[in-house]
Length: 612
Ligand SMILES: Nc1ccn([C@@H]2O[C@H](COP(=O)(O)O)[C@@H](O)[C@H]2O)c(=O)n1
Ligand SMILES: [Zn+2]
Ligand SMILES: [Zn+2]
Image (cartoon, rainbow, N blue to C red; front, side, top):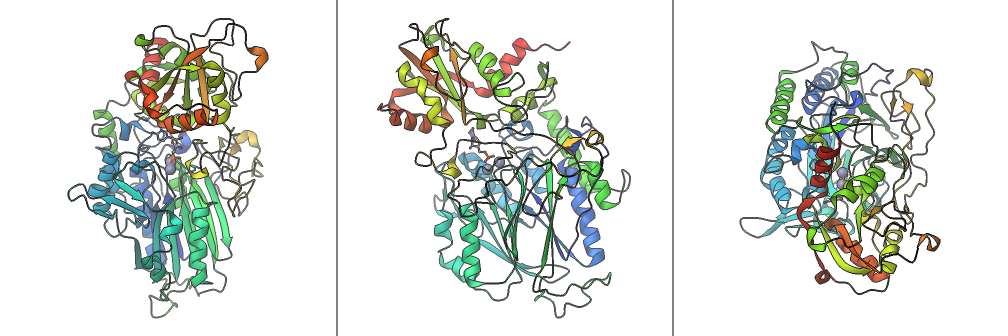
């Protein structure tokens, strides 16, 4: 862990359900490789994870079983360790590559900008040569301009100890927001390709391993699963997903399961399968030096565990301690992280937060909602372009642009990036009739599939208890994360608050037994009304609905400047069309050149939150 990280707290733990083939899974780490310095439950860093994997490999080898590591993308954007360097990722690409990962793929975040996908192509793919898979992703080679697979389309290998023959794929959901130097092929088209159809007809396979930056209960995974099942009615399939930042485990059939392992280095997913055939070995008997014998089974068993990323859990699961747990390699990587954090001055303070502000742990609007704070305090005081004088204005931002909570205490360089990592600027349309503008939020906050597909949703709801999957999805489960707290082993009062996951296998997935935390949904977008005539509802926006007619006075402005973060421009223009106007991109212009949500927040904190 990093020197300033909060020490982990002891808590009742469930053991890891070791099997014949075991996996560790990370996803959506978003640059949090230093771990969470202010949250004891998630305070282990990437160096500790390396020690953990190395210790579990020792155990796997001792027992003659196998352990594979998987990462399903979104490794970047979301933490100062990645975002504060110039170029971005100067330190994290090397830090990440220290881990020995067997199968990995890209997320959507690696592709928003051409610089980051080029870094994948020139740094991460070669570092993980043979292991990085891009089943539906191409890049235009920056040197030749030629369109090429970002990495190989699939991988076949045999596990070291058990001789399990694995055929692995690595997909990305049907993402369309990538920069124009990459090409994402729709999953439904990729699985019709000759190479895929040939691969799934391979009869020398004991396990299909499908990893993807894709939510588990999605059309994309469903179609890959069905394509494999059409050719292989009973070969086990293990799926690893990501993107929705939740802990989730889904049963596809009795021999096919899928795991998603949260976000931001909070969770290390553990998965095991027992009863696989081992065609890569002469005999299945005595593969295990420990004498354990895994016979292929007509009904192999699958188990999952979500490990809280902290040293208390790591010591427990390795039966080691502070002295015996860390490996030299792991320690060195923790030092690489501390030195990068120092060089980037990530602990430099802009101010001190007087209390906690939450993205999803309190309802919106409310006193401790980060969105209410932005809407009522930060944006009204900072959103002003002098060239537009005192024109009444409305700013709309997607809530997905705000990525994490603010904890009471120092608000640092790092915090600015954990809250708001994106570099998008502001744009505006001048003189938009207020009668139109006031209806926008309601349109943007509707789930309107005709306007935008589910996988493109503006909504980013961090570990939301409610299903985000569109109901047209054949695997749709209306209550994948119902709020049922698990039955605690001890009284709730003795438990620390944390994840209490309900998934397709029940309520015993989390390694740490916690008291439950309630998560609340937030709307797709919020708006802030600024410099409105005082008798209207002013900057205190009617949340999530249009302003009721009864609230409007004669003094409503006739026209306003409509400002938005440029990431949502296409949605704003679409919604304006829906409202009967014909605004085009040419009607838009930069607002507050050079400023971003990140810079505005950092400035506001510096001006308003002193440290005592
Ligand atoms: N420039 C950007 C990029 C992304 N977002 C938000 O992030 C969501 C995707 O994040 P995942 O980690 O879930 O892949 C996207 O839907 C946006 O809400 C953004 O605001 N600005
Ligand atoms: Zn993500
Ligand atoms: Zn994603």
